[in-house]
Length: 91
Image 1 (cartoon, rainbow, N blue to C red):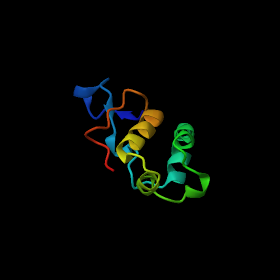
Image 2 (tube, helix red, strand yellow):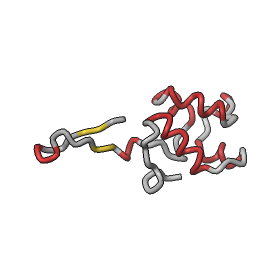
Image 3 (cartoon, rainbow, N blue to C red):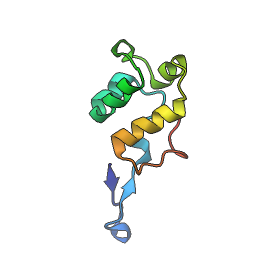
Image 4 (cartoon, rainbow, N blue to C red):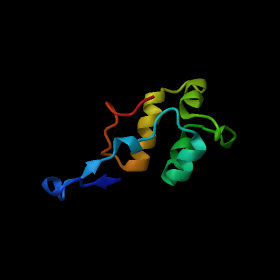
């Protein structure tokens, strides 16, 4: 995960960068390149390599998958199981 400390008051405090989360409008190929650990998730969900130039939301919807669950699985793979995306990941 990517963390940062912004000042001396938060020195040592780990802050998660929610702007780095995977979201539904991202292109599959970009996600695979930026987060190679997501490749297994895409394969397990049945995303074909011919769809690598499409956005996650479109493929999930056309495959009958819940987009939010797909995005959560990808974020867990990319950032770890403790990643809470419920209120932060956009579809």
